[in-house]
Figure 1 (cartoon, rainbow, N blue to C red):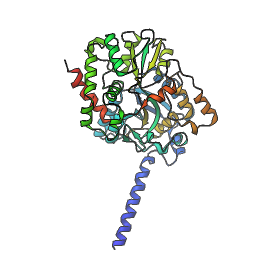
Figure 2 (tube, helix red, strand yellow):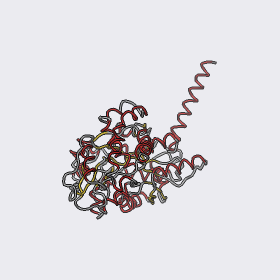
Figure 3 (cartoon, rainbow, N blue to C red):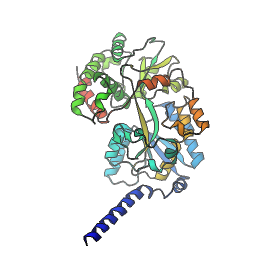
Figure 4 (cartoon, rainbow, N blue to C red):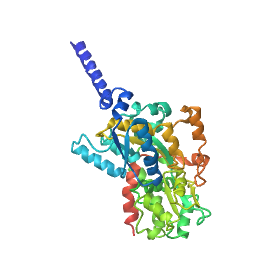
Length: 409
């Protein structure tokens, strides 16, 4: 009887595992062909940050027509900050709303960690996408962990970025190259520098660069996950630097741009002489679009480096069109879409595709992309690359900044 019971339990566990494995595909069909057929003629809504004109044009002018012509899917872009997207999904989850209005979200970092912990995502999806299997390094930790959080297949890689500063060469012939030089430059040029509120991911990334400097390097934070004790011990110099800079910032630090869009506007109007961002190549299309002055160039802080990461696409738990979402994501991972995204005409960011997995024609096309003179060389970017740290530091910096900087006299 004991042996029969063990067999029964083993069979039960096996069937349960099969059921869980089928949980992903049961909503979308048993094969990729089924998924594509179900998606044909449907509408897919992608909710994403809308603060970059080049990205928006890429989605509206190239991606949407491409997805429509190749798969018969109508892709609609809905601009919304990721934090607001997650709040919407959390509300729907709490209300038991099984069919929402969001099919795809652009996500990474602490937002992914919160979405995963809140069970707001559908999946795993990586294993379903043919283009991910064909053109990406499926064994890489880059696509297994997002800011230290295990991805578990819940999101698919869309792009790679590095943080750079953009400046007007006509006004700043010799930009600072270290944190110390940046602080000195701000003091010598009062009102001509600021950074976004750290609730915005660009502003938070700026703080993390200064944190790396004050801690003596990023390595300090990689030995373990988020540690509040380590954060407090390593951040004293960070708050000193930010408070020393404050009176010489734009509007004397009494207010900060709410996001990168506002900082870009100040830069384009000449109110400040620098901007910044998580896209090493966006200056190219911003100049092309007439937003940034033609004398715009880029730099990184050589003593700290340039934080880089991968960003992803995911499907919410209650997407009303999961088949269409998967088809659209697969299209966005294609060599065609990644190549156009990498050109300065639209976005200009780097690709997560493995070039050695491409055929000769496309590999040569990628290698032949010429970037704007405003963009740092691949060699400079590679040499300055430093990794992200646990997403817990992002939230901690956001909260502490208010106490340590905003509310300090």
